[in-house]
Image (cartoon, rainbow, N blue to C red; front, top):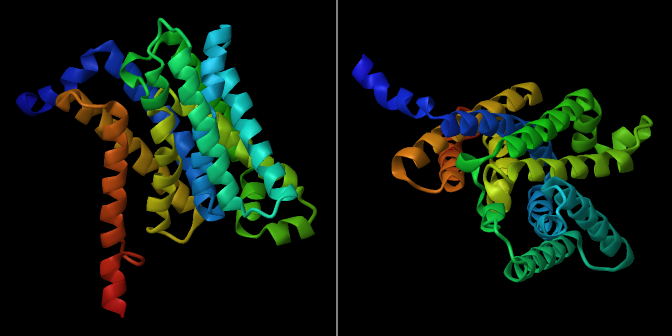
Length: 281
């Protein structure tokens, strides 16, 4: 038994692995809960836009000596406002506007990275640096994640109604405009938290895949949330272990495991899986 457990326990003797597993699990939980709302709302592309749009904010914050989170949050919320303004004052459809804004902001961030002289490898912003996370980054990530999770839990009923039926939510007196921008603000903050785990490029997977996986397994939101959290945390732990043993990208391993989980559920889900649908047809 000891011989079997040794390979599993060995990484846990290292401080950097303990930190990676702890902060990865925290971020996975908040991403999973938020991904359930985004799946119901159909906001996968919006999550992609916000997560990519924070890049120039991070680089500018670094150049000015400000916290990364501040710059990322300002540009994340700014991108949401710009998308809303362009949609309101032009005839361009929302999906096109989202594509324009997030590619434009992301390209600006790449230009700034190439021009800003840095003693820090700013590519970690793109791909994450979970195994090398510092105490300051760990504290920042955990605080942002817990704040987002608390808001999601406190406003769960209002946000759920807004995602399911905005018209009914408006008819009973809920401020759907405020809920709309609150949800997008939470996406921005969660993207900031995800910077240290999977980076800007892949954080959208953590904001979409757990909810999509759970959506195929149940029709009840509470159960969907629990399954999404289970999927996100397990894929994070397995991905971190895989990256350690394979000496591969931690972010890439986490997202690959999430994708494999989704594909497995897509085929084998008891009611909504491909095999189940074939039996019923």
